[in-house]
Length: 252
Image 1 (tube, helix red, strand yellow):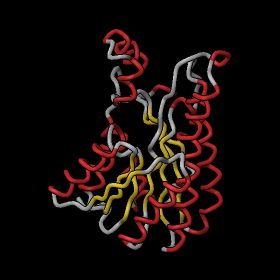
Image 2 (tube, helix red, strand yellow):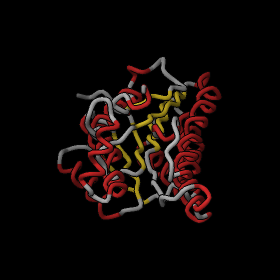
Image 3 (cartoon, helix red, strand yellow):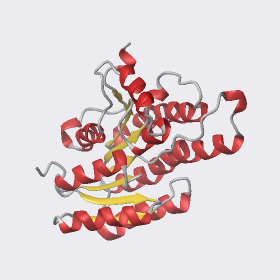
Image 4 (cartoon, one colour):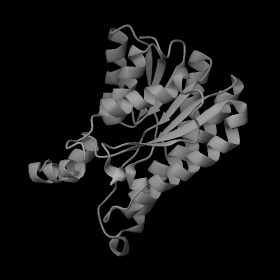
């Protein structure tokens, strides 16, 4: 316990799934956490829950597709806690399912705005803040859908591929200044997003489980553990890494 002692961390998409698991884990490891989301009730409830456990967590409403919200989110961390050490760009949506020629421009724009533009804005303002205190760790949530194709979700795949390349670029740009930039590529994780994708159909869930060499869905806590490693000083020589958390999916 205490691996992130005295570190200030922002987690976006904090109210559920991987984001919530990460906020809870960071809190247990003694980080000061800013939990950002557009779902105010769940986000504030999470912050209150951590406070009852004696941990420090502040909720902030932030739509990551809006520059003003992201800038304010980072400014809150700086003004309230004096620094920013860790940023987990986790917020994302799956969007509507349709093959490329039938996909709508509105869906394309919405997915790209949240999943890719949101990560860019997080990096932009997060890196600026980290440079003030000599470095930090940026972690972004991509997906195995950024590494291999998935029919029916072209915008999602494109956005996650973009996150991977943005990670590599920023890692090279800011390595000399002590800012490490890495990303995770989760496989099929048991989260509300996957529940929406399967429509809670047990047969469809079984099909997804069969795709995983480990024979089951991943857990949000398993992704959070990798985020913790990348946030901590244990990963001090790792930057520009694209790390699958996928039960062996992309090893096929």
